[in-house]
Image 1: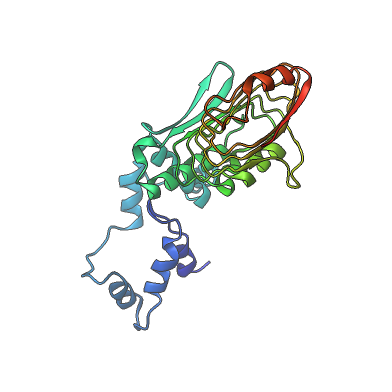
Image 2: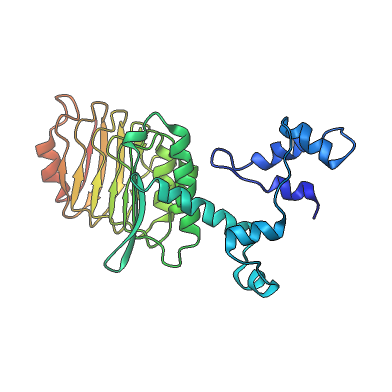
Length: 287
C-alpha cells in the first residue's frame, strides 16, 4: 500500500470520495513530497506533531500492537462506522434508531430539511451504514418527507422480516419501488405510500395482481398520479385511497377489507358498491 492509496481512502462530511480529489492534487509535478503537499494545499506548511504525539493526544496513550490488532483502531471500516455514527448523533432531531419492546425501529422525518437534499442524502447513508452492522434488523422502517429517497436507496433497508414500512410524502418513490417492496418484504403487514406522487400504477410488471399475502393495512391516499391499483391481499383489513383524482381502475382480492376512496374519483366511481363487492373477494372499477 502506498501513500497515494491511503489518500484515496479519505472521506469527509460532504463527499465520501474526497480522497480521490486529494490524491489528484497531491500527485503533481513537484520534485519532493514536501513541495507536492504544499502545492496541493496551496498554503504555507507548518510543522505537524509526530505520530507518537498524535496518539498521546487522541488516545491518551501510545497504543501497543496488541491494542491495534484487538480493537482494530486503524481499520478503515471501523473509522467509517464511527464517522457515520457521529453524523447520526448530530442529526438525532431528524433520524433515530431505537428499540421498542423487542423490535428495532428506524425512523426519519425530513420535513424540516426539505430544501437540504445534500443533508438528507448524508443522513440516509449514515442510516444505511448503521443498518449494515445491526445484528437484529428493524421490523419497522419509517421515512417521511424525504425528497431524495429512491428505490435504489431504499432497497438496502428491505428484508424478509420487515413488518411495517411507512414512506409517506417521499416524492421519488415510484412503481419500481412498490414492486421491489413486494419482492423483498413477503411478511409486510403495514404499508403507507400516502402522498407518494411518483406512483402511478400498483400492479405487477405485466399489469397483473400484485400479491401481498400478509398485508393488513395499506394507505395510498393523496397519490395524485395513481390511476391503477391491482392488489391480491387476502388478509387486508383497511385500504385507504383518499383524494386520488386519476384513479380509474381498482382490482382487489381481499376477504375483510374496508375501503375508503373518498374524493378519489369522478362520479362513475361508487365507493359504496366497491365496499359491498370486496366482501365477495374481488372488484374491478373502470370508467
